[in-house]
Length: 249
Image 1 (cartoon, rainbow, N blue to C red):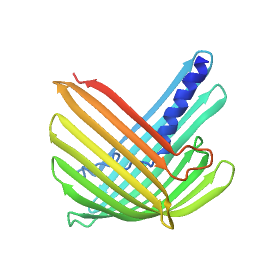
Image 2: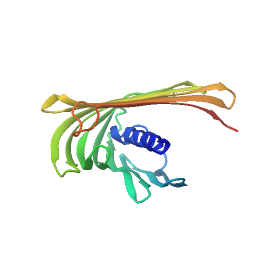
Image 3: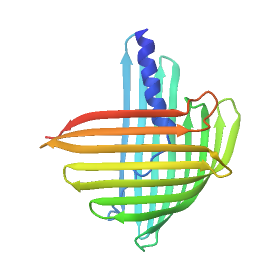
Image 4: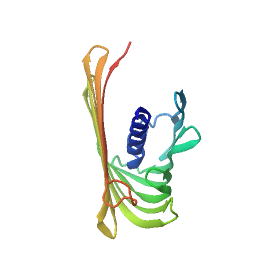
């Protein structure tokens, strides 16, 4: 019974992570002074009790800035296996190109993505899209961005059925840092199907980082995802709330 409970918690956690629209805003770097910025992580865990649980994850972010051009490559791949049974196999690969018109408010975007999620019954999801990113405010303490695009989406399910459609994508991203002790960030995506606005997705991510006393800070993050017409036998709503305390020394 305890083993089933632990596995259920792990499945719920990873289902929530990969059920949402990929939040590109938190992954792109605003620093274009360096030609190349990036980060890569490779983690794996092995736990042995009644069963052997193996988890492998790789996250990579690479951004190349050249004159008015920005190239962003993202990869996030994860697998969990219990004994010889693979319970979770999720991930995505994302490539995005930005062209900055240098008029301080308009940036052109084009992107493509491949994603897979066994929990959502999705064998493959392909995206191709393009649009514009708008710089509403870009000050040291206040940054607000918005974006609009049109994308083609193709989903192939595990049972070999498929669905394809064209969606609009609208997003707004807010970063507020009024002082060195408080940081607020929020991103919302709204993705309606272009020929059926009753079919849509909404995802929100809100995070707060506040200093309590010197070197001690409180962090909280809330994620919410809703899909009005998910894959068969997949729930519509996922959400999570994370709270924590961080100490720097």
